[in-house]
Image (cartoon, rainbow over all chains, first blue to last red; front, side, top):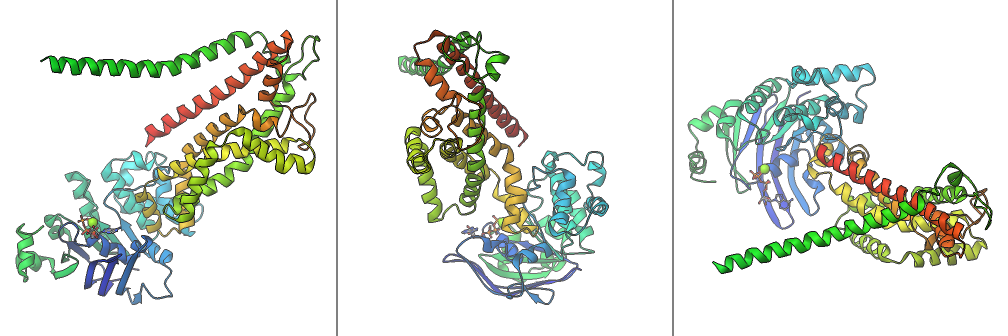
Length: 252
Length: 280
Ligand SMILES: Nc1ncnc2c1ncn2[C@@H]1O[C@H](COP(=O)(O)OP(=O)(O)OP(=O)(O)O)[C@@H](O)[C@H]1O
Ligand SMILES: [Mg+2]
């Protein structure tokens, strides 16, 4: 079941340096929220806080609240390993498991969490590959190593892999950064499909992409949230002068 | 532009010297192989590989028990060393910056520089003297210590080749650290791990001192792990230094068998490493 994400007064430190500063932002359920901002402003850090992937680095500290649905992800009752199953993540660099076949890449999460057995695995794998718009291209050779696909296919494979464990939220960190225009178009189409069933938060450096696929856009600068609004209004009539400067390439 | 010509000439000279130095290694190996092959080939045959050594002056006889003894002790050594060393490598990989890791790495590097004679002496003092007999078990333990640094250091390197992006992808899928190790890191590095083990086995198979001091030798078939046990390197050592021509000939035959085994292991390791690199 899709869930919204509610970030309240969230801050994050690497050692002494604070890279996310008291950000409050809510990503509505079944909508696409785009995070934009110059390089190094803390977008990836914020995104990786939502599945608590960043606390794996030593010396980091977080403060504030992030809720998925009603549940505070930092509460003692939440196991971060379990949380990460509920939050799908797509990385900038496509990262299929290279020693596994296309089929096994998608099945990995099913097997890991015991979500399906026997024949059901094959059905679920097919369904996920279809949903990720990859089935037609790989159905004749599911035994091929995942790493042998093209970059765009690999990224869709990663989406299929994430879909298999039925996450509530999708986090995407510049998922199109290494793709060609056709690959980008396919991922964008896919994201538009995904938002019917999932909440999507996507980091992108491409303003056009943000305006094409997102319902809401948030602008982050030096770790602070400068402005957030409905995407149409955000790009047409930004209220903060810093946003306007960024959109016209004066910052970043 | 004499300067330029000078630089060019120097560059050529340097390159030629490098090629020469590199060729020396190849020439030496080729000479050894040629020599061992020429002297040994006439001796090696089915009877030679499957018979007990014959007394001086008696025709026939072979290296069957030494062959089995070597296989057993090297296998035993690998059986002990592989799980421990791969587990250690996993620890190093998971805790790269910890104090314990730094210490383990240091100790491993020192161990790899300890003369194998000293390793043999250590096991001799700790096991052979205490139990009162030379044994295949002691030999296997000594060889496991010889293999340990090679396996640990190569395994750590192979595990490190699994990029952090994939580990993060695994964690992001909801895998725990242990699951990530067992389902992603170890299977992903399996090819490289096997290569490291093969090289360690090849190294251990040729070691003389550690088995001489721990398993001694034997003229009989192996019956238990608690007995003195023959091995190829020790047999070669004894036969080659004996005054009898037929024993010396057998030393060449045994050397040919041993060198061939080591060569095959190394070549297989090299080939499979090349293959797995190309697949990445
Ligand atoms: N593991 C880390 N340890 C210490 N500092 C880090 C670490 N990761 C990121 N930083 C720092 O935190 C800041 C924010 O980094 P982050 O990756 O979140 O930026 P970003 O907005 O995603 O940038 P980009 O658009 O280039 O991906 C940067 O100044 C970066 O140098
Ligand atoms: Mg980033």
